[in-house]
Image 1 (cartoon, rainbow, N blue to C red):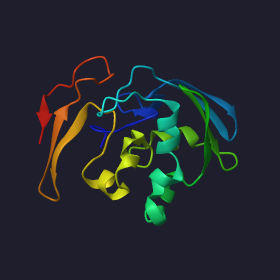
Image 2 (image 1 turned 90 degrees about the horizontal axis):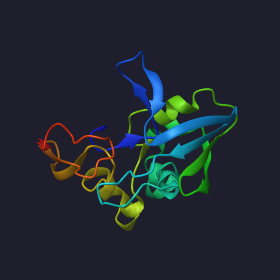
Image 3 (image 1 turned 135 degrees about the vertical axis):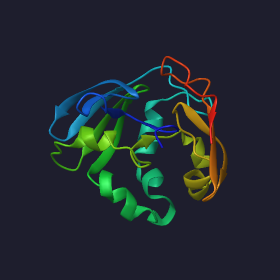
Image 4 (image 1 turned 30 degrees about the vertical axis):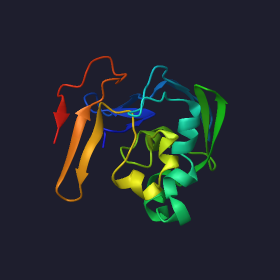
Length: 173
């Protein structure tokens, strides 16, 4: 999934799993339950829309995390059940509020899974089920081209990737 989706904060796998900025430029603790995140400017999703605070609020909100009828509740609650709300401060700043003190909030936001990754709200125009299987829109170095369940996944380089260099391969299958 890190080929297609990215998180706000990441683990540096090469340096003792230290936390570092992902889709954020930086973060700061406000108190034991709140974390202010300053989003990176110039990040484009696979559908060419730009990352904003609205995307973060959507991505960490219950409609995205849990799906219609809250069908994804058991999966989502494994890592992000401690989130209370995401407050939008301005187009590139959010405050993530936990339910009470949470010393692991940064680690929860860095976890590599669909629930903590940021997605373009354009998925809201389609169905949640479609987004989770065949039409995901992330900001990672590769975007989905084709998908045959249990057979293959084809990815192409995201030509507007913000990471400073093009992905090493034109495509992956």
